Image (cartoon, rainbow, N blue to C red; front, side):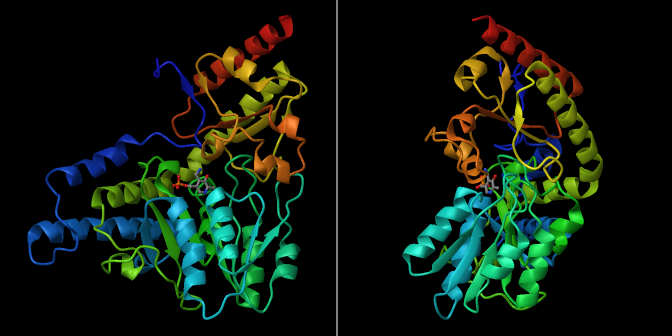
Length: 383
Ligand code: PMP
């Protein structure tokens, strides 16, 4: 059944690439050593593999290998960025972020707020974009960190991170960007050149779940951080625990693939996304595009269908896997905080579907999805 279902929920997660899986497999069997065992070949082999994976992630991120901290995913990377910087600060000050961030940023910021930090949450415009001059105005002498995502996981809006990074650099404030959705989907130079700290997630780039990284660039000025997990001195003292080398290898392989292939992939994905958009709007002309019309992730389409009861539409769609809310908020059934921040009315926000196209989406699947929507709208109208 699953094989017939068209998967278009690639912001929630992506399929593991077979090449990534093949790279990982030996590390679940033959090469099982602890990378921290320095007295025998089992440990050396594991350490060599971890080093190569770290090199591959660094090569993609445009950083030094010693600036890559492997984590369990972007949630942990975001927690480490905010709480790690705050924890190392001499005194409690200000942290700046914005309203459409992922919950792992907003909740980390809220938790720091409870600890006595002053948290500034900047607004976005109707496209979900923040105005860099708002960041400029909000920065204070006690601002320890600005954290603005590279691209949004619901509406795909790409933030002006180069401008924000320039402002932060000029004012000597650290800039963190959650690039979980942007890595491999945006021009690589932007990912590399526009942040001091950057979060990435393996399962958004065709590696497995449970692995990610925080890039902590030491180039501009040394970044002091406090770790979240105490214990051994793994990950340069920033994350204790025996290193899951097979997952490191998976993230390394996935980063190597996007470093080499993303550019070509992006244009194909964008073409499929535009075709899907055209097809659905033809079937339902009142559909409203959420997010920025141009500055958006190539594989993202987020559409509201005013007047349509979304559960009925989904029930009529058959074998198409899309989402009506982000997977992280699917329990609450509340209208999306992202759409509300953009000024979308709550009832329209509830009539919204997010499509995510990725490496494995075929042209035939796009055609079948357009047909399925056209039929579903006809059936709903006939009732
Ligand atoms: N940030 C963004 C923008 C995301 O889309 C996600 C995943 N939905 C996360 C962070 C959390 O990533 P992970 O699942 O790797 O913890």
